[in-house]
Length: 365
Ligand SMILES: Nc1ncnc2c1ncn2[C@@H]1O[C@H](COP(=O)(O)OP(=O)(O)O)[C@@H](O)[C@H]1O
Ligand SMILES: [Mg+2]
Image 1 (tube, protein in one colour):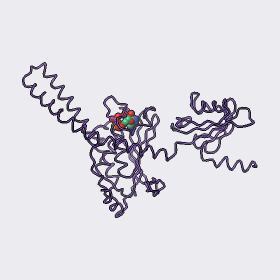
Image 2 (cartoon, helix red, strand yellow):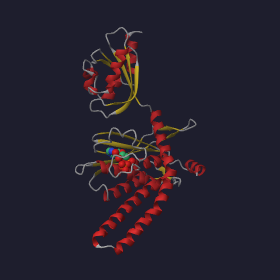
Image 3 (cartoon, rainbow, N blue to C red):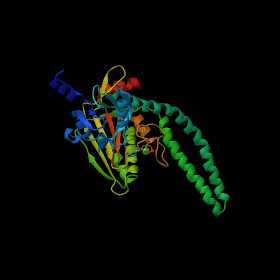
Image 4 (cartoon, rainbow, N blue to C red):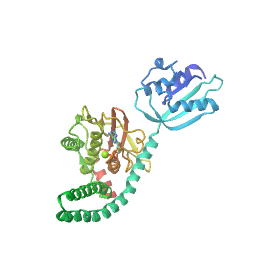
């Protein structure tokens, strides 16, 4: 294989690929590494890999293991943060280069689309399995709750001033449980999505206005809408809930002062989602909700869409689970990526396809 040929292959590898020497300094990096790390060859070559990945990066452990054992090593789900770039989960491969003095080839590839899809479908079934239990629990809790609240009311009439504070407390807390039950019960709402042609901007507008009047009063909003966006096939109530939940999380994450939430829409015809059976549906409508809060805690990032995952004292962990269920019911997907200072949720939806969608909805319902 001549050098030009080698150069061609090296440049064509679509994944960040590097060679480091025995001291873990970078010897070579392919163009995919340059774009992945937003760092030029010149900035990389000769410098220690640790300078870009951090000295405690798990990638270095993989490299050292490969060098020590003289075998190629793969590790999945490694969090890689290259310099200032957002952290990403990568599968990392390291292979010692024969006949060198400890050089190691590193190849990183992001968790494949297939794995991501799996996880999305996983969220969906997680939400589904909660559905039945949620409906049952909610129902079972409501009756005794009404009893407790009623008893507290009766007590209140016979008690002195000091003790009334306690019955007040009982009332407040039962009301709180009632609200939680309301939210849980939405999972039990098995009503199929009413898919109608829907202008997403109308829904986003409503979500933003109600957020601004309430829980997001402290936020500064920016909007960037693509006015030519075609309608989606959507259930207005469910999508409103989706965007409200995302805005609420953003509002809860941002600082009291200087907090910003951006809402944008775009048309991205390239994105397709594979369906069982081999067909695929285009998901060209993109809605992005981003905030400048501290980001999703690293230990939660893989699980935020699962039910009951919350980092908040009074959190239910149901907001994103509901988002994922509703978006999936629309045939769409929701993705998130996060780093300190920028957390972004992207909802991708299909466009309204007229009678085709109607016929399908009929067949489903
Ligand atoms: N915009 C965001 N910024 C930071 N963390 C977030 C954001 N959105 C969601 N999260 C994290 O995901 C968790 C789950 O969110 P959610 O399902 O809405 O439940 P809850 O809001 O009740 O905690 C939150 O507790 C929080 O840790
Ligand atoms: Mg929430």
